[in-house]
Length: 85
Image (tube, rainbow, N blue to C red):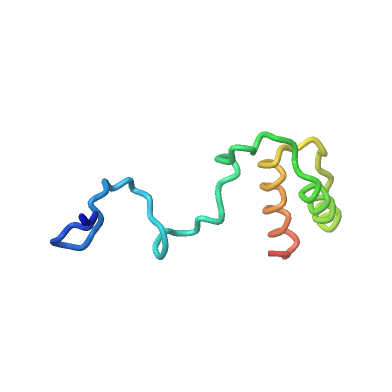
């Protein structure tokens, strides 16, 4: 039976793709909204509701025809402005 391990250093013989899993991978749960595949779709109901609450708390009005990415950016900004981080 053959192994995919390199006998000298125990690393995989697979080519390095630059991807990392596990420790050291950085924060993979937060992605830039501009990079979202669905970022140009209309905001979700949950985003709309939360954004409405945050905007009221901050005394702001925000247009209701936002994309998912735009809503996320406003939510992040308003969370900081209202100290709800």
